[in-house]
Length: 561
Image: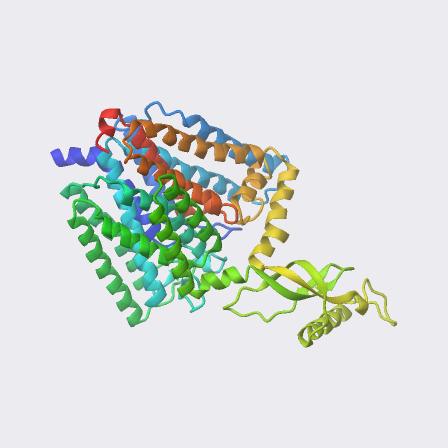
């Protein structure tokens, strides 16, 4: 009966450990598609619901508690503002066309953040914290291994980058495609890596060893292999847990590659759990592998966030040699893999643009290729230029289209423009990614904010993506929602920062790891909706809960850290 009591006392901890493996490793197969949006209900929603149910049961039974947590008011404030914004969008500004979609968007914000309390409640000793952090680091290793397989062995990918892909189709990356591993897109994977780097360095520099018992090591092995088996079963058997779109059948060689991945994964996890602690050499190799995977994603925003957050972390603790190593190694990987370097060079391009000032029509003279980032139509004129053959051809095509549409003014018909209005100019043009933000996503969010500065126009009211969380917050939930969300995270980080006085000098490395990791996500949020990316959001909030649970331990327990 002792083992039953042991399970009863620790069931939430083991479920959370399984969740830590499941979220990064299991692809975003849709379970049920919601009408009018391509953001589906997935298995992770049910897993989170299970965690919440068990958490409530254990809370009622007083197996877990919140202690005297002062952050509850911040969470409650943000949730109230979100639903106030929902009601305002439906009945005041009338900017929400699909109430069910808006409601689900609101609930999902709570779904992510509730993990903070669940993770907080399971930390009853330093060993609990180490066990779950070890699980998180192990899941990162598996994500990286799958990423290598996707790059070199044709492992499949599941993406939600557009409505068609989000139906759960199994895809295979073309040579110019960017790596996504088990994530729904390269942006999500890169953001996850950015978040993990300061945590990895904090554990690497931490002088004490992460000692785990034999039972805990076996638990990590079993919990780590379960999501891998489940993922491979779904792919190899061409089974998506939905009746919407059948997956593509894998070839024998692709199935063989996945089996090799499974075998290698099991061996690596077994190798890890043979050690009572995390050897520094393994952590160092994991950091190297993670840098390579980050470069393979070719994410410019995340590369900035990585360099900034990791460099500041190492500078804060005066680890100058490691800082030099980080910068040199990242530069070497970037040079060896041309994708990221090419995207940087294509951020600003000198292009010819055929422009019609009267109608506002503009088109870039360029040939669209799958391996090159096209320029957008946002540009800064530098000089007028002589027409090239390509620009003259494009100009004639635009004139012909205007003629057919009746917009061109000629001797025989009236119109709003003439052939003389079309001119060719040269300018510095931003790439299509930057242009989309400048011309569409950000103006749309600003317009929503100006319509209701306090509460915005409501969740889901400015499409699935705003290409920047700061714009999304002010557009959907207004100034109140943005301040409440940022305030919640800052209050948590402030509590962790203040708690540094309770732990040893070495242990402070661990606390600052999560602070700089979150700082990296705030940098990412300038251009990406990173706090709305489910895999990243889940990991963020449960990690904040783990570290907050750690600092709430008494001083006697913290001496073991």
